[in-house]
Amino acid sequence: MDIAALTAFLAPLLPYLLKAGEKFGDAAAEKIGQETFGFAQRIWSALRGKVDEKDAAKEAVIDVARDPDDEDLRAVLRVQLKKLLAEDPELAAEVEGLWRQATAATGGVVTNVTASGAGSVAIGRDATGSTITTGGTGPTG
Image (cartoon, rainbow, N blue to C red):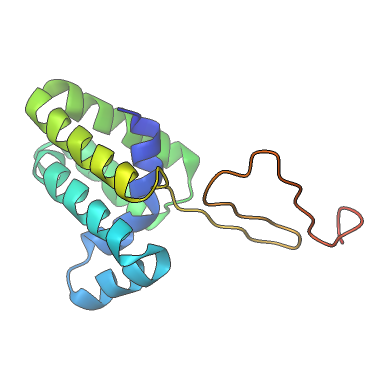
């Protein structure tokens, strides 16, 4: 399983997954879609017990939830998830199965795509052979 892809998928959703209450889940579902968020919930549900048992993993999750875009924090979370899954083959198989279902159901797209700034482009699927024009003529448009 691609732990980096799994981490990239979960990281921006951790603030929602860690908070109780339907309104937080609704906000996340609006952001990425109900089906995709449902898979995130199932994957997190599988991982949560083991994460809570290991202080380093728990700390990594909390840190990423506070700052999902910090690549250093994501790297620590990747390492912790890799260790958890290596230590528990049953959990690894369960998460792998959920991950496969998620990628199959979403056409292979289970990452969160965001574009920001003038001239930015976000692509949630394949763009092979495509020409993308943002309308700008230089670095500032």
